[in-house]
Amino acid sequence: MSSGTIARRNSAQSLSTSGQPIRYKLHITNYLNVVGYILRFIITFVGVGGEKHATVLARNQTIFTPSGWTFSIWGLILTTEAIFVFLQLLPDHRRLPVIKKGIGYWFFTTCILEIVWKCLFSYEYFFLSSVFMLFTLASLITIVSKQSEIPPDGTIQDYWLLRAPFSIHCGWIMFYFALEMNLLAVNHTKKAWTQIEWAIVSLAYLTCTAIYILIWKRTADVAIVLPIAWGTFGVALELTDPTEKINKTFGNGSLTTIQVTSATLCGGILCIAIIKVTIMIFAKHAEQYEDKPEPKRPEPKRDNYSQV
Image 1 (cartoon, one colour):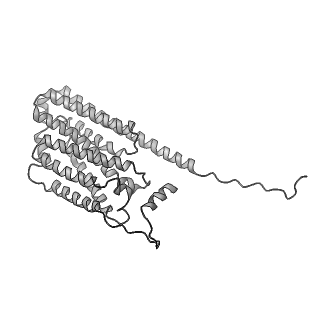
Image 2: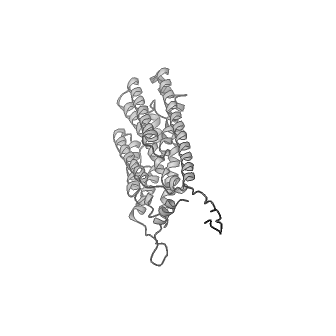
């Protein structure tokens, strides 16, 4: 373990004058994170009236709507964030910089915004729900951005339990926002060409987002683009056997174009992500090899008699 990693860990565990670790008290943000998560969990599974999201999506089918199983990613998001909510209550995690400075009040803000979005969506107020989804996305981007400014400690827990849950959530909302735009298009016009244009714009937006994250931004966090690949894969698979409504509205050429483009985007994201992770692994091993001190060579024995 490098000295930098040890220093970062020790900074989160300050010692008192007696030499014992300081037990930090729970901050208000720790309580708000629990409250926000519980409220969102209740709204997600109990609701506040209105229709279920699956019913709303089925009634307002678009050419960009993915297969129903795609939305099972919500289970992964809720589970990983539940683990985070538990960990951030523990004494040795409460004051970690990745939680205190990297998240602060933003997770609670995200939960409240998402609750409002879910309520508006269930009553099919798509314009207002898209506005609050945009606010939710901005809140998640803030979390991911603030956490990226904090050096990781190199542990699996630091990334997969304290950072990746928000990256996955953020990536999924990026995709879902594109879907919301298509729902707005369907509700404002029945023209097939207009809906196709919105689907193409959505794919272009997701492509630019993935390129920025994977290539331009040069971030080590590739988890954020995986939900985009997941969503576009769901779109491509859904169009292999489209509903009767979609078949009647769009021609085979349009369906094939959106399907192939979605599948290509999914494959491209996965390939670039794999290449980037491979490069990072080799770079990390090379850095560790360079930092490894060379073994000291034994000094040659000197003769007791010096030449005059």
